Amino acid sequence: MLDLAALKELLASPQKIVITTHHKPDGDAMGSSLGLYNYLIQQGHHARVIAPTDYPDFLSWLPGNEDVIIYTEQPGQSAALIADAALIFCLDFNALSRINEMGALVGESKAYKIMIDHHLEPQDFDDYRHWNINACATAQLIYDFIVNELQHKELINKDVATCLYTGIMTDSASFRLPNTTSAVHRIVAELIDAGAVNWRIHELVYNSATEGRLRFLGHCLANCLEVLPEYNTAIIAVKHEDLEKFDVETGDTEGIVNYALSMASIKLAAFIVARGDKVKLSLRSKGEFPANEICKKYFSGGGHRNAAGGVSSHSLEQVVQEFKLILPEYKKLLLQ
Ligand code: 5GP
Ligand code: MN
Image (cartoon, rainbow, N blue to C red; front, side, top):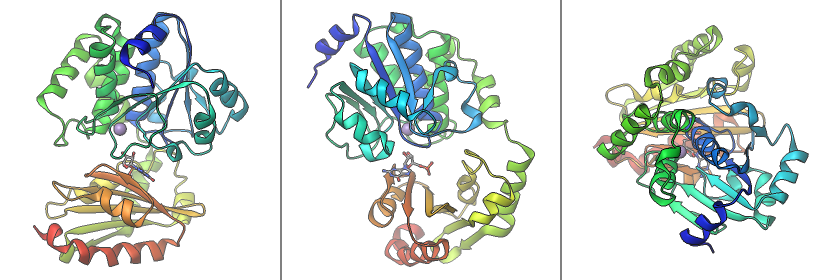
């Protein structure tokens, strides 16, 4: 175990540091990781971000992106960096299974592990924890860690601010979710003052679609959407061959579930997609409805109350059927 004083003492001299985040990283995962990276390199640390898998192109403009290593593309170099690290920052996840094969390497490593995260039920693999489920994004916790725990507000430069803004913006669904408190808006204001160009970041993340992605979205809404008014639920189920037909790339499916949730009466939306030998579920809900409970109970997953995910080894048709059979259990909540 490390206390804050010991961690500060360690960070007072240049260290070999690995920063990692969950597989299929999203805006908060990469924004947090690169925000912390851009902070650490200012102090002479040898820091590297290792992403377990690749991530969407709409995040590739983030400052420091050119230095990110993707584990699946460079497993040897990644393993060497993990084995050699004095500190490993684990950001936006709290169970080693979320970093795939890297989990065993990080678990075995002698490095101090620092968990900074906002997901429920953390696993005990860390030496220092900055964890708060009320945070709207891990990027918010990175800001808090740098400014309030390490007392380095002056090191929130334009690059750090840009990355953290991106994390907060994406995980709060553009400042719309209930956890986007006034305190979050104050942090966001500080990030803009530190150089984050808010309108430009929105443009880079949200106005970056290709024609193919837009046509795929059209296909999902026209041909794959099923509305179940008796449960205030909507499902978008996408076959593997559709991913191939529309040449869907990493990130192209991101956010599509929100269109299903945008109908006034819909309380729960599911995007269910067959990827390779697995079926992945993305659930989104409104208000008090616990999407994460369904993912945890039935689909070996988890997440937040209003945004959760899971996986199944059954066929797409089976998973859709299983999902529908769960709804009666939640009927009262769904119709509230
Ligand atoms: P998404 O639907 O965007 O893949 O994920 C939504 C939220 O659920 C994210 O916060 C993500 O961390 C979490 N999540 C997605 N898939 C899984 C999973 O398989 N296991 C767990 N524990 N959380 C997941
Ligand atoms: Mn997050």
